[in-house]
Image (cartoon, rainbow, N blue to C red; front, side, top):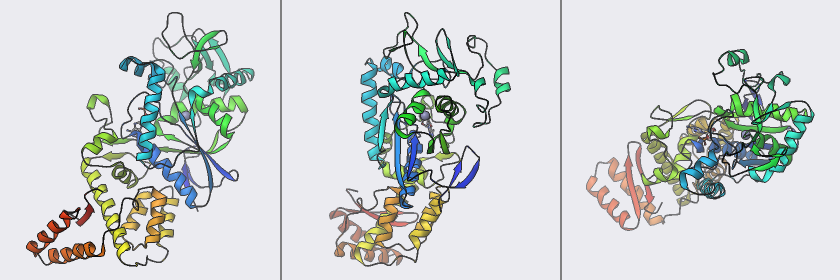
Amino acid sequence: MLRLYNTATRKTESFKPLGDEVKIYTCGPTVYNYPHIGNYAAYTYWDLLVRTLKANNYRVKRVLNLTDVGHLTSDGDDGEDKLEKGAAREGKSVYEIADYYINVYMDNYSKMEFLPADIVARATDYIDADMRSVDEMTSHGYTYETTDGVYFDTSKFPEYADFAKIDLSGLQAGARVGFNAEKRNVSDFAVWKFIQPGEKHAMRWDYLGRPGYPGWHLECSTIIHEILGEPIDIHTGGVDHIPVHHTNEIAQTYAMTGKKLAKYWLHCDFITIDRQKISKSLGNTYTLDDLADKGFSAMDYKMWLLSGHYQGTRNFTFDSLLAAKNRRQNWRNRIAECYQREMDGDDGVFEKILDAVNNNLNSAEAFAIIDNSRLSLNDWEKVDELFGLRLIVDTPKISEKQYALVKERDVARAAKDFAKSDKIRDELLSQGIVINDTPNGGVWQYSAW
Ligand code: AMP
Ligand code: ZN
């Protein structure tokens, strides 16, 4: 029985789908820059969510959006449009920037072995639908116009503060000097922005008689409405989305449809690096390519992510990444061993692994079970399907002869016969098999692995 922590209720609940098909929406990336490793955390955990649902025999329909317009550099309604910023930085058009970084993301998603979303929705393909969303909200009395846009009047939605447990009076009192005087309430937000005369903004659409573009929270409500219909089963994102982005999505959807947006809300916490936030100024915005330059594959990083829990800050260090890499290598060695001789798994071992993951995606506990149990080849195949770690494809069969040499070397090392173990190591190396001795014992791999 799958249990998930639901941000909406602040409780861990048994998962009960709304219909035959589990509808999931994941807030996707803003495609204006190279993603750093922290950006993959959420997608890794939501990939695990989908794989877990499938392992429990649910049918899943998952939508991922790509924000290629309108996401401002702040969560509020000020700041630069991220796409415009990317275009200025690289001397390209906003459309070139979006296309380029969508390719980067999609390429890296397949490197991370994420199951493809059923539908990938580009925000710019939903602009007409965005306008219809604003029309709906307006016809129900939830919006007002100012000089610079159409705003959502949060005082019209009394539950506005509930989801994030926002202290609205505190927010009002703390409103900054220079705060947009045309806004009725501090928490009001733009659902549509007007482009002012003389303002540079390449992406623009005519609506309400003026050029403008959607507010960045709007696309998610619109895309969910257009593709999935409300309410959906599960909505996912990072914890940073709770107070503004998801709060605003909930308000918009209610104003458009009178319905709840989602039954379950899942949020993953942030990755720190050496206990510091990931930021350009600290020079730690590592990309997957940076990890590859240091000898770590996307699968090593995914292994690192899944060796912890999606809730609670995870602290990244290269030492812990090395431990994850070695652990994965150790698992692949065990798979290679399964190729050599028929191995029975412990009774019900995969069920135990799935039980652990069913407990609010506790992959850390599942990994500990894998470390401490015997798995058959069939169990490993199921493990690989559950976590998407390319364990099987990345483990070519070695010959029986080579395997016998590996084992002979283990025996020699245990007997401290280093001359013999070194000789075997060299022989294996000449056949393309590298043996690395780690604090947790020797692991071996083809040099091409
Ligand atoms: P950004 O493009 O920087 O706004 O990041 C997009 C999303 O990636 C954010 O909304 C977060 O949910 C997620 N994200 C960014 N940094 C981290 C991090 N250090 N750890 C986990 N998730 C992150
Ligand atoms: Zn969203």
